Structures are given as C-alpha cells and as structure tokens.
Amino acid sequence: MPAQLIDGVKLSQQLRADIAARAAKLTASGRQPGLAVIIVGDDPASHVYVRNKVKACGEVGFHSVLEKYEADFSEQALLDRIAALNVDPAIHGILVQMPLPKHIDPTKVIEAIATTKDVDGYSVLSAGELVANLPGFRPCTPYGCMKLIESTGFDLRGKHAVVIGRSNTVGKPMALLLLQANATVTICHSATPDLGYHTRQADVIVAAVGRRNTVTADMVKPGAIVIDVGMNRDDAGKLCGDVDFAGVSEVASHLTPVPGGVGPMTITMLLMNTVESAERGLGKTQEKTEPDSGMAPKPGIA
Image (tube, rainbow, N blue to C red):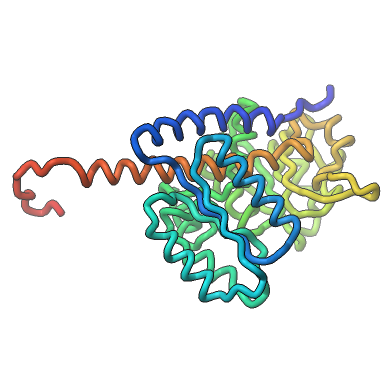
C-alpha cells in the first residue's frame, strides 16, 4: 500500500489559523506581535524567502518590519540595528536572513540578537535551552518536522528514530527534540560507514543532508515514517528532496513530499515562535503593572 502523504501545506494552514487567532487576541490587548526581518546583499533566493516571511506575517495579523541593506553594509552597522531592535517594544522577533556577505560574521550577528527575540532559535543560549529541556525557541525546521510527525498520530515513545545530518540548524536540534519525545535516537552523517544498516532499523527517518536519493526504498523498514527535509533539483531541474520519493512511497507508512512537506512548516513555526514571544512578553508586562500589595517580602524570598 502506498505511503500516506503528510501534507505540510494543509497542516501549516491549520496552525496558522490558530496563530492568527492568538495574534488577534494579543492585538486587542494592545500588543500586536511584531517581527523584524533584515536582509543584507542581493542573493535572489534570500529575497524570495524574505518576501514569503513578510507576506506570512501580514496574513496572520502580525506587524512586520523589513530592512534591506546593500552588500557593503558594515558588520558594526548591522549589529547596531540589531541592538536597536532588541529594545524596541513593538518587535517580538528578530530574523537576519542567511547567508550574509563574507565580511560579516554570522555567529556574531546571531549572538547579538536578544534571546527573548531569537525566534529562529539559532543562538548558543537557545541551543542550551533545548539541550536542558528549558522553555525557549526551537529552530523552525526541526520544530515543524515534529509537528508533521505528531499529525500522523504516531507515538514516538520507545521508538527508534534515525536523523541523517548533523547541522546545528536541523540535524542536532532534530535529534534533541526526538529525544524529548522519548524516542531512541541515532544520528548518521557523512562518516557513517553503512547508512542503510541504521535506517533499516528505524521507525522514523529524518533526512536532512541536501543530497538527492540519499534514502532509497531498500533502506527503509516497511511501515516507517519518513520526513524529507532536503531541497534539491533533479536532472530535469525539478525540485526534489533527499529521499527517492517514488521508491520509498511504496515502503513507508507516511512520507513528506517535496515540495509541500517540510517547507511550508518552517515559516509557520517562525510565526509560532513570534506569537509565543509576544505572549510571554505580555505576561511580564501584566506582572509589572499589578498594583503593589504594600506587603514587605518575606525573609528568604527574592
């Protein structure tokens, strides 16, 4: 029986409806969620991504700020803009589109973003919060993958998940999120000698290496869930993932298509992180505006 497709477009629409409702509630209270997007340079793909993010903000009722700078924009000037946005009460999330020009250190830029506004979830502190299972912003693509798996009704507890890829943006956080869901996780990468040995034991496979046909039908256990994060082009120039879609769809129980699977979820989880940031900030504002009871703090209580 062919695999059931996990429709990222449909799930994304459902989640965005909830995000829009939460944004409307916040806006009514005087705190419209706000996202600032910065792009430096003229990379065509980056400009497309940025336009899609700004458009998505408008569709769910967010306030958005788009700042475009020429490729020779200095690193210090960019850091100064981030510092200003960090203290802007109308902005609850800051995103700097990658890649940046070579003269700008991306790590320095990411670490300059206030953790409370790091809605991409890329900073070292955000990564530490994920490792420690503390509240924080999860990287958008792995977060979206978890929502896709969740939508199948599959219980990850005690199951074996294999993540192919060890990047800081997808592979590593993906493994940590699966661990938090009580899966047993194996991470495979370019130095793994026999990839198929591991994937054939997996109940869930997440492929995120950026190389087409990395996962073929003979590498998949019958009934496994396969999440394809890859975004490549075949010989005809058509978009494809890391998974041999035609072959694997005859073996897996559930499979994400490319396009239409993980892609739509990435921007959706960016919106999710932003609305959560605005909600957290509202709670802090309410705490500050509560009337003083006039009681002195008890000894030992800060």
